[in-house]
Length: 113
Length: 463
Image (cartoon, rainbow over all chains, first blue to last red):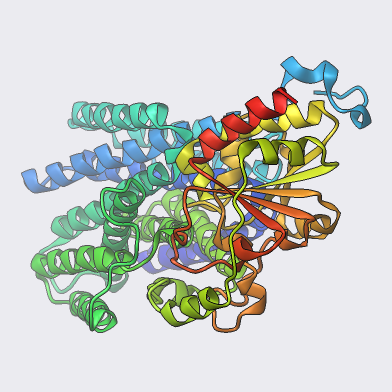
């Protein structure tokens, strides 16, 4: 594929991703806005893939290597930290804690939780 | 592995990320979604690993162990109340990585016979610029939230002019770079200037506006990563980065709408600095403040039919979420109907209060969003305000001179009685006077929110 064909193709998926992003996010309730921010934060950790490519390429000199290495360090922190923080947050969203289920308020009836 | 096969396999992480966001529409499977996203990320890393396979593999491993180890430890150790600054920190390092990739790529392609391809040069300049702004801005946001530096707006004369000039200079140098001048120093200066701009741009923004800023910087990092995808001709970077860019932008706009302020006003308004006149006006017709003891408030709560808790940033500061939950349980045991009214910008992050209360095991159906909570206040006996201020300030409805005039608020003054837990009469983060405190319906319970709630629990128990 020539460079220009590739560029047009890349621009196409970029535009589609913008609309997809808007579409998917507009369905997220305010309740989950913090995990949403944290979750998308983890997703842009994909920058790690870019840093890995930079570090793995044949180098002209040490500069490229050092910069790539720093990129991998920062990118990994972004990925791991992002997903772990989000998981910790989402772990806490529960409908009813199992321990206290029996004495739940009268209107609930037998809950499925 | 061929590029085609790698791109085919990259569809797995792309689909996983979309599903991760899709699953966030319901708290019941949100966590599953995040796990799907993490698996997708793992696939992306493994595919890249196999495709890139090089002599530097050990460096990649060491880098991942250092960065991943730091991320895991920091994310595990952090308290739920410190979440906003953690998100800011991880956002910043992502932006930094994008800027570094731009530096490395420019170094690799120069000198190029003729000139570098214009789109590649443009991508390098932009991802360097945006990534550096995001990195520096996030670090300042982190420092403000961690209280390493003052949370209040920091301003000086000519600030906007300096910022604007700096940004214009960075853009001009970027254009020079794109136009074919083959000098790596240009990018260094662009990145240096953008870093300085990031610092100067977040410094004047007050702590109460941090939700908007973090959300915006999140969008910036996503955008920088997507543009980085053009440099490296990598689809998964483009799609994942742009999903984040789009979602961060939308979330930022939603935050702005929740405060009824334009994003420009949030970013350049240095909120809280211009309110002296309006604050003085509000103070003069103030009247008296009624303060109550914990015993009085306990009686009010225990004999109410319906109590609504209104949490704010003070709840996070005092880390009182577990005690609030305990008090709510106690009241429910006495037959009181309890719910929580959550303002979209309460706290330091969108949805901050929801996370804190979820940590304390508050069932999420009890958490009411503003539009659902407001009609309920007229049927509410006691609105108990725990560390919230601006989001319950009736001046937003009534006083055109107030800087927050027009912001949708929780109408707690429609409840039969209002109890405000507050440390002192100091105005809140934004420094705006609140006439709610002088309302004859309102009683103040002074003290640290956690201590006050603990006392209330003891007193309600002894009734």
